[in-house]
Image (tube, rainbow, N blue to C red; front, side):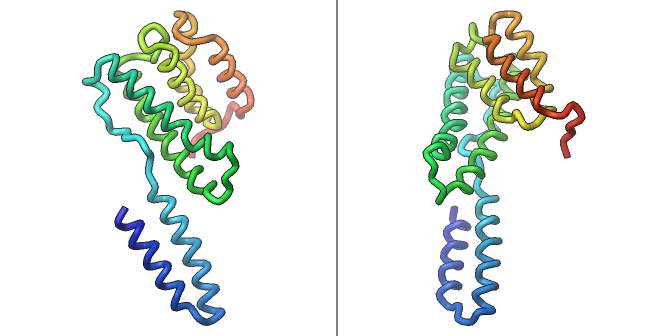
Length: 179
C-alpha cells in the first residue's frame, strides 16, 4: 500500500513540473505505464493461501460464503456501469477469480466437491460459480467436469448447473489449449 501511495505522489509531483510538449508526450506514456503497473500490483481480496486442510465443515462453509462475496462484489460494480473504475474492477475480478479457484482446489482436495448435503445450497452454488467464471478456459471446465457430473448423479449439485457448463463447453473450441 505504501508503494502505491508513493507511486501516486511521485506521479502527481512529476506531473506538476512538466512543461514542454515533449515532456507531456512522455508524461502520458509514463502515466499509462504507471497505471498498468499499479493495476498489476492490485491483488485479490481473499487470501488463497488459507490452510483448508485443518478446517472443519462450518469453517469451510464460512470460507465459501467469503468466496462468493468476493466473487460478486466487483461484478456488481461493473453492472452498475461505473466506467471510471472499470479497469480496476476488471483487474480485481481476475485476481479474485484466480484466488477463488485456488481455494476451491484446496477445498476439493481435503473435503471433496462442495455438495448440497455437506455444504448447503450456498456452498454448492459457490463451487459451480467459481468454475463458471472460468468458462472461457476449456481446460478448467474439463478439469472439474467429472466431479460436477458425479455430484449431479449423487444429487449433490443441480443438473441445470451442469447443463450450463455443457453449453459453455460447446461454445469453446475442442482444440483450445492454454498458453
